[in-house]
Image (cartoon, rainbow, N blue to C red; front, side, top):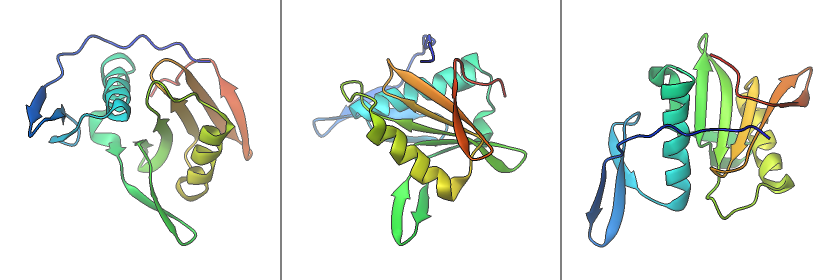
Length: 143
């Protein structure tokens, strides 16, 4: 498991029509603040503030095609114009099971990133894809 100490951040949150919204600084838009979104926003701040990943090379919730199915990944970091790291976020009360790992592995068939991370905000697992095999990581790679 990868230990992540999320940085303090002054998130912009508002309430509108009885629902909470958070400003996504990378997408530059307000998004519905769900438990999964809270995990995603904290992970994004960790990537940008702590790991110094370039915000301009991070894509969030983009559609991919798996056969005839259309799916959306949570976070994809690019490097040298190619997918480099895919991150799947789950809400905190969702345990990270083989199902979550299988989901990100299936997404990676289409994306073909070098690294895959699954997180629920407290548990974080990472894998480097080497010769078609997922090798466990003990930390997120430096950019």
